[in-house]
Length: 276
Ligand SMILES: Nc1ncnc2c1ncn2[C@@H]1O[C@H](COP(=O)(O)OP(=O)(O)OP(=O)(O)O)[C@@H](O)[C@H]1O
Image 1 (spheres, rainbow, N blue to C red):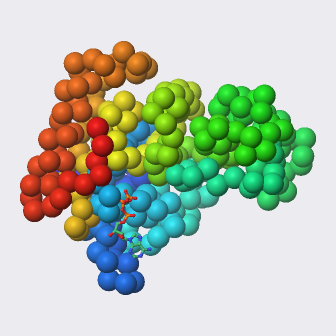
Image 2: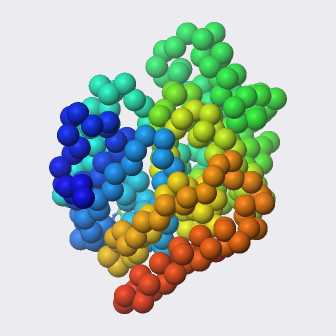
């Protein structure tokens, strides 16, 4: 069994993410996460699943370097997040809301990271064209955000994230505010992108169904205090179609996750806001 709080030795292939006994207590005293140990290999699609308040966002933000762990360490390709540039790998964080500038059209919104980096306009526009095509928004580059549906705004936000060609995508309930049909379509598109680009994804959701549909592995978490309770490999082939979602195998996988969440709740905790 791997040592929990030492990084993998130099000779072995690096993990994209290594969480080594990382825990979090906020300055106000809230114990958001007990020590977590988790290793994520390049190319995995790992979902953090659990009720409200179990520390999913906290863990994701610690991976992103937005919050420092109170104890323990987090490494990306063997380096602390502030040294990520040295590894030659990149990361992007997609939030629950699309975070677009309302006064700027889709092209300008998506181009922002390259404008900030001073990339020449023609080169930047060519890269914007490429990512807009990837997310199916090539015909909407001149539209303002308010003219787009919620799902299209999310696509624009994801396109902006892909512009810097990240290998690691951290997604905090990116489709949680969307209707079921749009959400499912974006889930399917995300899987296609993940495969095509060879991404490593860490995805946060409350939804058991979304977790089963997307993931190579699901990390089940529980609240009070926030902690990891179990991990499940979703050993099902890709591409995963709409038929998979109504199959017996899908139902069996969903049942395993549901039972795990119930077990955690019966250990003195409340199952709240976990949807099927
Ligand atoms: N900046 C902060 N300061 C203090 N406490 C915080 C902060 N952010 C989160 N918390 C607390 O830490 C715990 C874990 O919160 P977190 O947002 O990580 O959970 P979550 O599983 O992502 O919840 P949700 O699904 O509702 O987004 C909660 O008790 C929350 O109130």
